[in-house]
Image (spheres, rainbow, N blue to C red):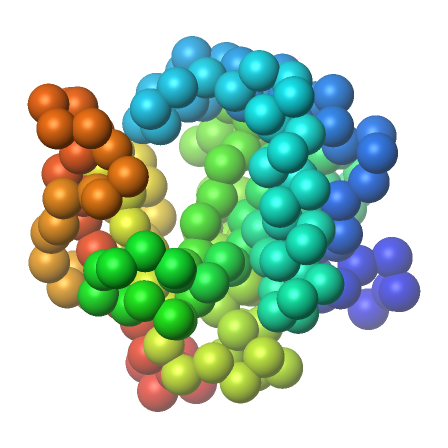
Length: 182
């Protein structure tokens, strides 16, 4: 492994965010297809704040939603990683695994490969015992990734930060424990 990445998979490198990531991240966060299962598109300032939040989380917790690039050409493809669940839902205090990739990199196995690498890092060096994931019940592509990485559906809940009547309010919750992976 090179020092260029915190960890890596066969095709992907996971690293801290860099200034050069801000423009492509803002572009993908303003793309209606990429953001289909999120409440709103992100303006550049909001995308920048999200990167800042990810970096602060890394400094505080030692993990985050990492910037991910293809190792073969150093192309930024989006993020895959872990964040502490702070909402009052099952799994609060544990890490959630999540991903957001530029649509040019969809359907190439990157989300599954990257999520598997994050789980190995979570259950290995980070010493986590369980990892959760959640998304809108409408987001079947992400649920497919959750299933492919070995997660099990725990149940459903109403997302506490989304307005009543939002088609995205109903969420599924998935979980995986260390002994399922190691």
